[in-house]
Length: 145
Image (cartoon, rainbow, N blue to C red; front, top):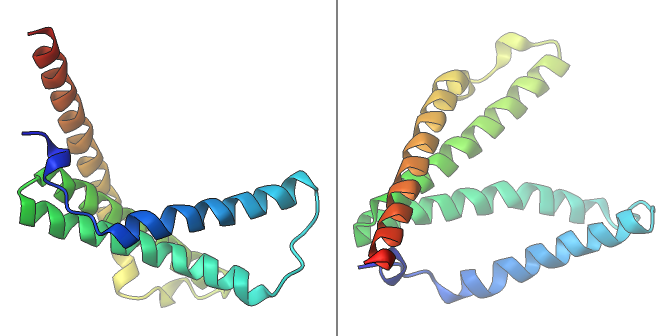
């Protein structure tokens, strides 16, 4: 039984998010190619910048929930890895803001677990890599007969 048959992604996620990301990337690629700067409303840039981590965390959470529901546990590891990655990025940003304000002790309680979560993230990456190789070898073995 292949993992792709067990997934149940919502159609709006598959239909809506990739075209939006392609449009935004293409728009900024167009600006870079023309060597111009963006002169539109700053709120648009802020909304895009603020929305992407939220979308990534949502998709990671959806992977974890879907993995447990369909018993495809590699998705649980993938979603957990992506959640850890989102946390590490957020903690880095909080630390940089605190450093810029000359208040390195003001890092919030939640951002202090940066190094530990980064280690967990690396372990999860190793598990995902081994699982991918294991599945790939199984597919090759099945193909060879």
